[in-house]
Image (tube, rainbow, N blue to C red; front, side, top):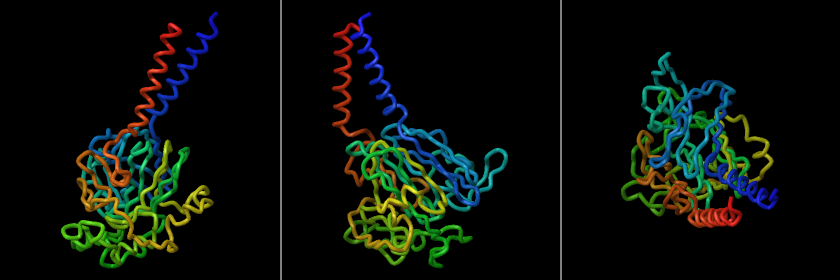
Length: 332
């Protein structure tokens, strides 16, 4: 038996398996509901990204559900509450409704106000970019936590119930959500539109500051500071609705101590990572779809595509050449 030839075959198979795990399995998103009531998560893929296994589903108290997203995927998630659906799946929700008339959102975004989690996977430098945005208002507490990745990989979100401290003029009908100042008043200075469509002219308002002080890591208005976008390489993500507190991992990590609380400075005067425009059914949020399907995290990265970094692709091509050469040399 030619042990050298057998060893090379085994090595090649292991390399191929590793490549499959990276490029086929992709990233895992796990949804967890710790609310005392049922939540109906909504899922919206970017314009150039495939939809996941569902675009909307029911998640009962204590329930979890996991999805796989391919490399380069971008999209957003949110929670719908106060939903009523009949036996055929027809119905609507009092907050975060996507207007589809069914449990599945079928490509429609959240109707403001809604707390949004936004992702761009494998962006610039092979990093994932993610954030939790209150630019479209707030309806549910939410945190995003990463596992198994490298780099910053910090937790972000808003664990405070902003509905309890929402200014009267921003309260949505029924009190189950808190509107953004842009939605409530429609003024350019609140929407960062018209003559206020740049970071220099659109500044934090007393309303966005209320959101920022409560949840320093979440986006509070269209040109919020760049510290509200986070990066991680090769991680999986858990999106938790109504977390009673940050996980043990986050609470013991000083970098995540300001996910939700009143201790953050919330200056909101940094570099813009948003255009302030909106996608279908989503309002004026920072997580707007661009023409190429990119999201605010993509804008923050300076990347213009949803694929891995070009240098990584070159490395993969060279690896393929090496494997092919080895196979030819050993007549495999």
